[in-house]
Structure formats: C-alpha cells, structure tokens
Length: 239
Image (cartoon, rainbow, N blue to C red):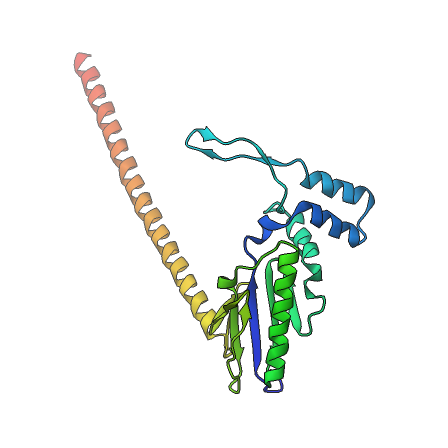
C-alpha cells in the first residue's frame, strides 16, 4: 500500500471457533511446542473429564462428556486456541495475521499471478481446516479490495465465492477499503451520543426522583407536625 499497489485482504471466520478445538489433538500440539511435565499434566487435567448437560424449563438432559472446545471467559482459553492454529500458516506464501479467532490473509495483487498465489493460499488454509477439524464459516469470510488500481478479482473457498465488502470490523476498529477513519469515527460518535442521552435521561430521572423525594418528605413532615399539634391541643384542652 505504501507503494500504491492494490491489496486484497481476506477476513476468515472459524465456525464456532472456541467450541470446536478437539482436546486430544490440542494436547498433542501443546506437547509438540515443548510444553511438558507438570504444566502439560495440569492442562490435561483442566481439559479432560468435563461433563455438561442442558436444563430447560425444569427438564434436564443426560450428562455427556466434553471432548472439544476451550473454556471461554478464561485467560488460558485464547492461548490454547492460538497454539492449536499456530501451524495454520505453514506453506502459506503471503502475509497471515492471527489474533485469537480473528484471522486474515492478505497480499498485493498487482498481477493475476499474485491473485492466483493468494487463491492458492486460501485452498491450503481450507485443507488445513478440514485436516484439523476446524472448519470455516465460508458465508462469513469476506474479501476487501484496497487500491484504485485493484481489479476486484473474486476468491473462492470450499467451492463458494467469498463476499466482497467495503468495510469490516477488525479487532474492534472499522476498516474501509479507502483506509479512512471516518466510518469508525462516525460509529463511535453515535455511540457517544447515545450514551450521552442515556446519561442525561438518568440525570433527569435522578433529579425528578430527588424532587419527588423532597416533596414526599416535606408532606410527611407536615403531616407529622399536624398530628403532633392536634395531640398537643387535645392534651391542653383536657388539662
């Protein structure tokens, strides 16, 4: 891009990424990364002998063993996922970036040959997903064509043409094919306004509640004073 060359970025989407990681293969890969001894034993104990069941409206299913997936919401889960997909880029000719389950592959596409190389990488990545039982949700995999001289050529995975997009959320940032921040700034501005309105509504509610509480207390005080005054008058009259 710095050299004004067209670039194609392909955003990949794993189907139920964290739920699909097979435990047995994951433990083999962990050992293959040199993690042995008590650490491997601890991770093995953490993953194995897990059970789950479904509860719905008072009915429960039978317990079943959990043989795949990394626990979500944990610190170790994303790290184990990265270890599992670490060899995804073996044999890939172009750039590939991985962050948890967010993966993208990209390359300059100044010629049909470069486009073919990128398509070849996609086929290799798809074969990896089938071999390691980590299939992609092809319908959610997207292609972004960047550059005025881009030929906007199509890409395919698993026999399906990938959808072209002009913008995509990348690690929380909206990226556009023009590489301008306006779309992201607009979205954040709307979000800020909605939060601002919510804050004002909350303040109005608190102010109204405060005013109501004050009025209520005043009336209670008046009623209490009225009762005390009537009682005092009654006592004086009897006296």
